[in-house]
Length: 118
Image (cartoon, rainbow, N blue to C red; front, top):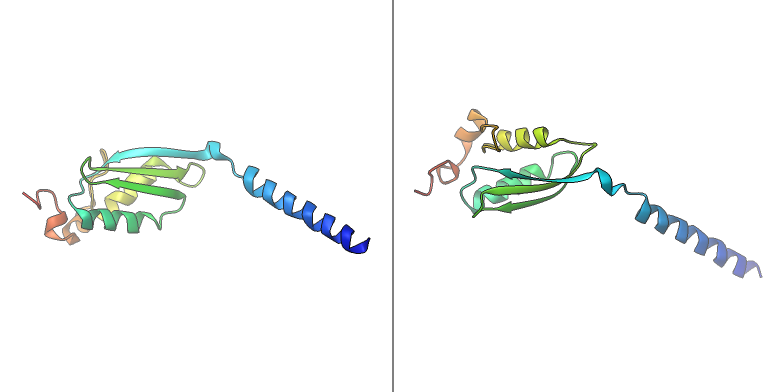
């Protein structure tokens, strides 16, 4: 009887934890934005993926070299589209209407700078 009671308590606790994990996340605060960027090559893609992954609030990043876009899924209560664009700029790339940070841009390899593959 005692073992059965312990099993029931453990089962209830597990259900409570699972429901908290499943329903505890507010997906209405998760947003997605597509940003036009000045990336040129696979090295650019890797640099953006790596550096943006350290930004607070960013959940997922998809970089499309051909379309020159970065699609970011983020938590709107932790970051904003402006902060994401600024972060991309600080990596050395234009992000929509936010120009690349000149110092960061100058540190990019020549192939990653605008016209680097022409």
